[in-house]
Length: 394
Image 1 (cartoon, one colour):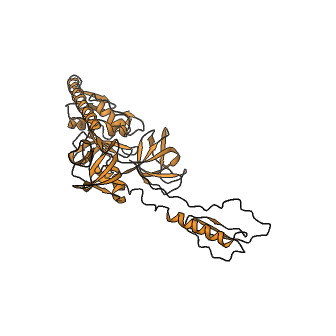
Image 2 (cartoon, rainbow, N blue to C red):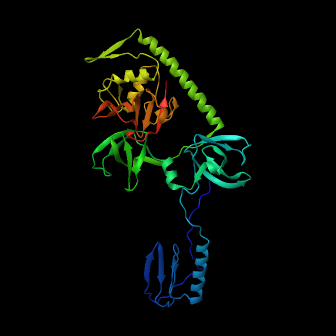
Image 3 (spheres, rainbow, N blue to C red):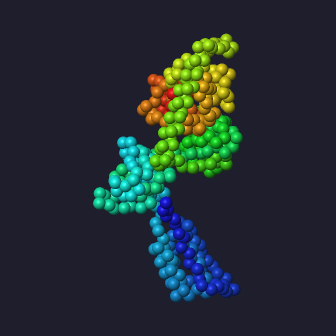
């Protein structure tokens, strides 16, 4: 991908500059990154150019001074203008997807699909008989799309489809209410989980979003990156579809096994409360089973539906009762099963947020292990925080 960089112009005198023993009374001014040093015997006025440092000794002749300033002006005229880092970012604006082709014509081979809001980087513009095309790089896809299907250089749009991410690089990350070490702890986040960044204006600290609210973490314990959703190549699409079908079949098999087992073991007791075994083999059955544990405690790192679980531990343990193995990680759960849109959400679907995960219960409501102060509960609406993914198991 082409990137423009600012070049700093500098004037260098050929040969050594020897300063005499006479004292120099110099004045120094600094404007917009410019340092100008003028000697006490120099009568000419120096008008420095941004980014250029000009050093003049009392031995410098007027002709040498003119030569240096002329050279500086030439170099600055050749310096490219710095533009937005988003100038080459293209964002797809389509109903579903646009084909990425091997050549700039509609008859050439399809090498991938660029879905709505997917991002790409423009490598070149090609004018063909049917209009302009962009050659793009998006993930593992390098090819051509019609210019009419993407928007290029719109910083606001590019920001809206990207996600600034803080990935945890310590075993347990403390999220604080304010950007200082004396602030109270808002919540805890495990290693390798990632959080949506909300603020980068405080030196040494990063604002992030977690279930308990927006807080701050030390930048020392996270790795920052910008996340886009890229095009999908033909090979990647085929592999994804195969994985999703395998996940569906595994879920169906697990549900059949769970349904059979439930007939022989109908309930269990914990303390003074009785819980029914899973019954059924669909998303609603998952919700019905999960609902029994509302009111039970939240426990960081926990996986017990009765004695305490964290958000991913709750989802993992609910699905384990149906014979489905899931990771104990809210980040990893964004890749289980297969993805569906928010509009297609059904009971039993896993709803993923920044540092949090829940089960959709229907009627714009989720059931989840929320926080230490609230435990396992229902929350509504589902979109109370930005939804990063919706994954379906059954």
